[in-house]
Amino acid sequence: MGRLDGVRCLIVGGTSGIGLATVRRFLAEGATVVTCGRTPESCGEGLATFGPSPPTNLKAIPADASAPDEVERLFAEALDFLDGRLDVVFHVAGISGRRFGDGPLHECTDEGWDVVLNANARSTFLSNRSAVRQMLSQPIDAHGLRGTVLNMASVLAWSPAPDYFGTIAYAASKGAVRAMTTASASRYARDRIRFNLIAPALIETPMAARACGDPAIRSYLEAKQPMAGGPGMAEDCAEAALFLCEPASRFTTGVELNVDGGWCVSEGRLPPALNSGTP
Image 1 (spheres, rainbow, N blue to C red):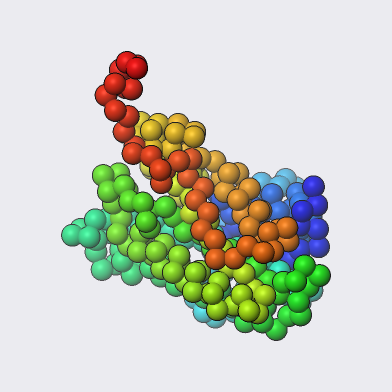
Image 2: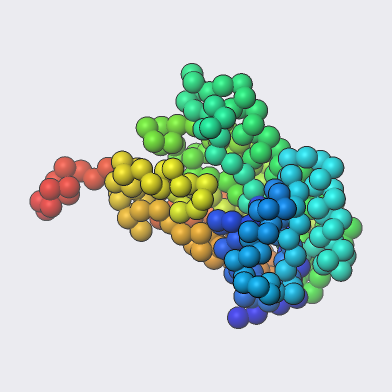
């Protein structure tokens, strides 16, 4: 315990799923946390999971992470709560855009492309820009850092599964986040600001409810994510986020960490002999 004692964190998209699991994990390790949801309602729902008396070292702020003026306000309010210093920014916020028209390239609509790139890539750009501007103004801390930025990608950006997860805008948006993180890690290492990336496969969260509830996809995951034989848990990603954000990993930057239960090294279908149980 205490791996984040004294660390001041902002989690963008931290009111459900992976973000909320990370809020809980960071609080358990002694961090002071600001969490951001898109609406006052989502912030209230996130806080309600802590019971009638949420921790005093937690604040929820509603903001649209894809709107520049709202991101500026978010950071101003967060810094006020965090006494003027920001050690960690973890950007989790994003969407799956099928309902807006995302799909395979020949089927993806203009709206699907624009909505998904706006929610996933643009929002990460805005939060990362505000984060690095603040961190550049901060003195180096006792661990040799000005700050840490962690972003959320997806294995679908480089390990596609077109039969079940053929969404071109989503893959492109997460590829953009990957490129942005790598470029920023390179540029800001000299300033003692580190940028890292976690890339989940299918995780049991509200956003993934459709996929997780599909019997065909769950069957596919038995071999595609063999470490679990199905979807991962939000807590799996929270543990990865903790490692990449804690001071103990201060010498780690530019890292892409797959949290995928074997997705990227597995075929997704067992050979017939294994399916039949024949050695």
